[in-house]
Amino acid sequence: MKNKKILTGFVGLFAICLVTAGVVGYLFSQELVFNGNQVNINGEEFQEISCDIGSECYGSEVELENDLSMNALMSLTSENDVGVETKYVSELTLAQKVVDFDLDKWDLLVDGDEVVVEYTIVGDSFSAEVVEGELENYVLIYYADNDDRFANPGEAVLIEDVLGNLPAVDDENADLNDYSLEYPTTPFGAKIWYVPSDSLTEGVIDWSRANEFLFETELIQHSDEEITIYSGQTLFVTPVSIIDAGLLEGEYSGIANIARLA
Image (cartoon, rainbow, N blue to C red; front, side, top):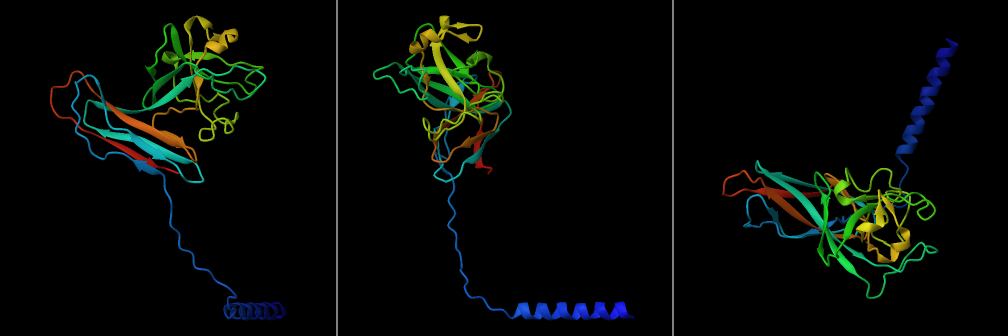
């Protein structure tokens, strides 16, 4: 009986506390109304394109502008008729730089050579080609850095030998080497270079000829579906569809879908 009385008294005291808390008034309250911002996606929503069966059919360019204070994970997919495949491409400028191994940041060489490269940013496989300013006896390479990029040089991979997503998982430019001082809107990513073909020996670069190389002017990505648009970055992408060469002449359709995941 003694234990029962103590328990009853405790419950009563707890009930009084709840009643007291219920009558406390607010000293201040604030109503919040949010106008949410989103990644801006600008481009034509419908196009009728005439192109040859078996060739690449280009849609119009789409602008992805991230004015948010955060990075945005974007999904680029497509819905196509049978026999139609779609990828997304973007462009990158490569240029000569003032080579100085005592500096982390290399400036662009005044009046140096430049080329424009079109590359697959989203698709089943990676490809890249020079579309403006092609130089004779030069090749495109993917260059992955180690953690100490000057003391411990990485390995060059010919573009046609690139497999999987870029940057590769063992590329320290993916998340360790931060290039935000040099490329504020692409602090991480993959490097694409344009180098003389005879400056490579089984993936090893002849650094004595670095003044002949055309280097990245921003870092890029490639995946089969998802890419990151960094805060402050504006990226231009173009959907490109290929109609299987074995299909009959006629009308085929595809829908390019771009959405923000996170």
